[in-house]
Length: 447
Image 1 (cartoon, rainbow, N blue to C red):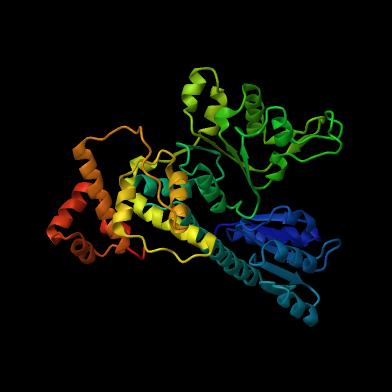
Image 2: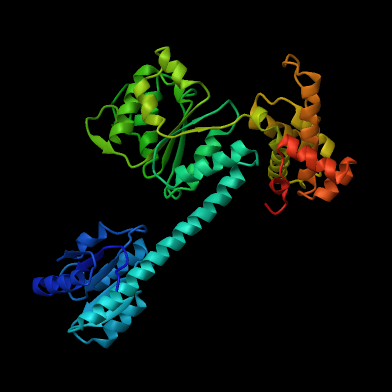
């Protein structure tokens, strides 16, 4: 039998029995880590542990039944095989009710143990595969719900977000004001294994210079005038989760040096203390400024840039994906209607098309404000003056693409309803879809 991947944590306080059992399992191809005390096992297991537990029941200190209960609190689906030499039927019943995968009575045949272990490891592998698949599906739903759009740049961005979320690597998010950098950071956090832990956002451009270090690092009582009691900083509030450093390009150089050290060492010292506090967290930073240019000007540390930009996610502005504006506006209007306790409005295709021809320098934030006004029955703002004029041919092309995208959005991707509503032939619609790079499936109501 080929042993499934994953170590076996073997616990038995009798050395001879422990060594004999370990040898028998290893001869059959299993990876075994043996322990005399159950307490040492609990430090090695968790929801992602790929192996199983084999433990004697009667042991000093933490016995097998107590170990079973402790593991059930960490991960109820982690298989535990218990061994007893007492032939105690009530104990066996209690063990199975407590969630034991199997129970073997001493003396047991080696084949009985290896078969039970093989089945348990196969079950564990299947459990972890199902969890990973479920996380992937949930991640897709969450990312898709937060980042609406079918433009190629958005499809590619969502795929990168899912890949980054599956690891624990730090990341840098870049993009113009209002493109949704914090939304992306939250999507990464919510699609990662840290999703149950805190997500703490810090806008470095908004924190006063005199308090920024205390806000981030925390302080001890008496660290400075007015510090009457000890206080946790944002770093410690984010332990186990994700710390989002928004607008990191606005951080003073002195703070940048301290941030670099924290990111590299994953530890801090509170103000007024020499004691190191270890940090288990992920860093995600964002900037609407060109950090490479700032580094060349001496206003941003290159080493901090290299440390943060292991993975860089660029958010496209709305100007690069006008075909997404109708769908996005409908989505934002639906959210606004829910917030204000109103019915989601029916938005005419001509309104969606006109919105898609506008420039949106404030990007999604500006579009969200427009959706709020529309839901509340207020007039949509006129296009602000002073924006660069487009050539007539460019305006016509942009309006045509927007009108088709708007009608497809409104019709849920139904081509016949679209070309009839637009008053053109089926062939003409197909030609225009090809010229503008639009795909029917991107507007499918089910997708």
